[in-house]
Image (cartoon, rainbow over all chains, first blue to last red; front, top):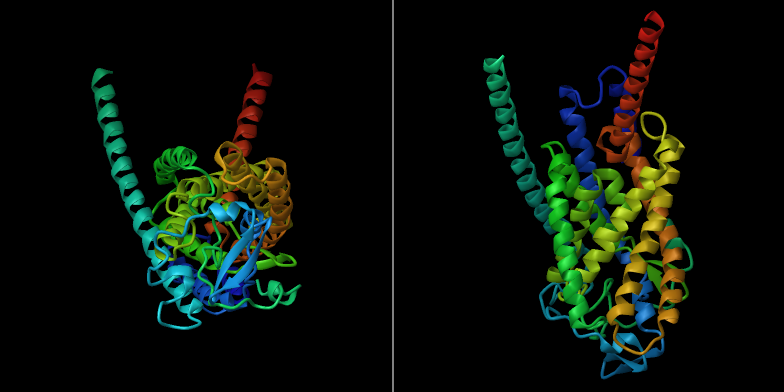
Length: 154
Length: 266
């Protein structure tokens, strides 16, 4: 991603300032590549992830050992993680980053997660950006009104 | 990012039949801290995120919205990649410093919060009642700590795409942000943690592992920020802030010079 975009940015950047009107295509090529990288990481690279517990989980599991019971795992010993409750949504269709009914579906779950995250984020940020343009329109009209008022006073 | 896959692969992959809450969980589960503390941190998280929404509007124009959305999605994706830090122990990106450097601390904190909410509600990762503590640690503490470090190191950032200074500042901000997030958990555990592990043990282990995770976080953050800065420096919040500050000091100096020459004339 960075090599081609880099070259594109430099070749165009030489004669066009960043953020100029003509950069619309370049910007969207960049955004598209960024999104593709996220999809590849979530959909493909995620299979290479370590399955060991992370720093926080191993902190809470210290003092316990994991034993297999009836095809499941249980904690034996004395540790913080024993106080953890099962997740209230543990039986939801995408729980634990796998599609229920589909084996080895971490990549599909990851791609769904990337899609949902970008939709939620763009939705929230679009609303915030819109409320900002309302705000700036209002403050601009306030300013105009004030300058007109000041003008009549002088 | 596939540098990780080659190094110190963890022990053999455990059977995938497990049903306990400890598998594939990346964030705090419910019940690790008691209900009053969970509630208190939920209030802190709501207040903090409301403030972020308020302040984020200044950083969000139409051009910034798609980039901010993609930053959230990218962090969701990279959080899935657990990398080994010790035998049997892994770590993953938190993303606070990365988000703050790319889209600013307010929008960045909202990006991480969205990732955590999606993980908790859609993927059953991170307890629902623990959302307040998880958001406080990872969306608020790590993002703003990382941003403060990045702003403190801003004078080392030079040139159109930030140069080597931006890479080093990104690494440092991410490393410190990660240790600060771990400190957030230590504080929550100290106030209302379950179980009888001593605070010193928990704190020592959390800081030790998260210093190592912070190195991974720093590398991922440095590589990502440098790549974006080389391709599109105008999309990096820290570079925009640095450039604006540079312009204002320049005009300040001009003003001082103008004032000086007027003084000479007088």
